[in-house]
Figure 1 (cartoon, rainbow, N blue to C red):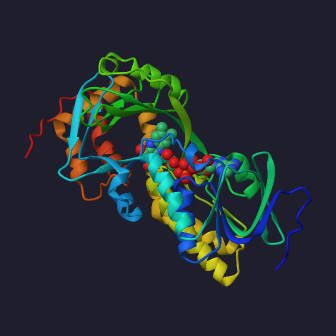
Figure 2 (figure 1 turned 60 degrees about the vertical axis):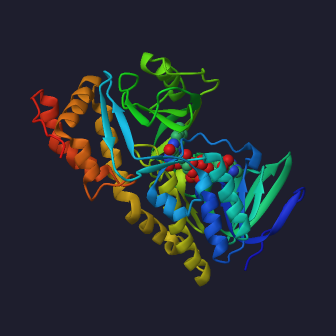
Length: 406
Ligand SMILES: Cc1cc2nc3c(=O)[nH]c(=O)nc-3n(C[C@H](O)[C@H](O)[C@H](O)COP(=O)(O)OP(=O)(O)OC[C@H]3O[C@@H](n4cnc5c(N)ncnc54)[C@H](O)[C@@H]3O)c2cc1C
């Protein structure tokens, strides 16, 4: 095997790892955990130290994620069986199920727990290191960065790029970047009268925008806005709406915002490297949820890298099955979700109002929720066909047939 030539004035040069995972967010830490459990020498690197973890994320996940990750009860802040959709003019449509549809997680604890699990499984976890340069030399990845002003260098046979939205690292790695982004604004506030999640369709604030209020404990509510731009500003405007501001017990100090990739990269593997999670754009375009799909991608990456390492063949050809594996698991959902999002972005506030009114009278939402093909994580197909059937009539102004509850 070829050996890298280490430059001088490097503070830290470690031995050769099987796999470096860059980014210890939820996707990267889970991948490191799986790879270390499978017996590989794994290095997990993140620029944030454990005490700096402060995710901009509401932390809502469906049952499949909870089962897959074997989530401990202390990670779950709230369970959700119902939600209310609020139209631009303020009409409300409640959608309820007898089963728990989603869990709201302690997002900071989730990240700490996943890093800890990776370390316990045998991964070496290095935090406070900002990676700035990656290059493949003689069949190994040489990764350069800095920590506390000191230059660092690592080497591994393979890399999992899980650094979230990092176009520079993606370029150096030879993989694509997500092709489209939305922006998510987020803040936790104290509010009265938010017993369950509210989803506010607010295309009047910006085309395609929606907002949410998610209760996580007594008076504690996570507020978010997803839009094409200026999400921080739109979150502040959303909080100023009379229906929201009258319930606020405290005014938010600081709204944070972060890009959300909503169209996956065209290619997610190169020689000896795969990208996963937000780095690859594996995020639901409808809701901006990326935790579950990032975990599925981590599983696919582990399977393919494991096989490639055992055959000692980390060529592009050998890793191409990662691309096929994750696309067959979630590609269709991402594609339909993108169509739904683009449909919603084209609708005026009046059209959204008419659709919500129609959905209420025809019990459309209940039918979607009751459909066997619907789940919290895989909903785009059911939504899409229901909308195609109802949209022309809903927008025509015709009086809908009233469907009574069974
Ligand atoms: C407002 C908002 C609300 C959301 N709500 C939900 C939700 O309710 N449910 C859901 O499923 N998803 C939600 N998401 C999306 C979810 O947060 C992301 O999909 C998820 O965090 C992706 O995880 P990841 O590990 O792929 O990337 P990230 O969480 O972005 O982690 C990337 C890691 O890489 C590290 N890193 C980056 N660059 C470098 C570097 N150069 N050197 C070293 N380390 C580096 C970062 O410090 C970070 O720890 C939300 C997003 C937003 C913005």
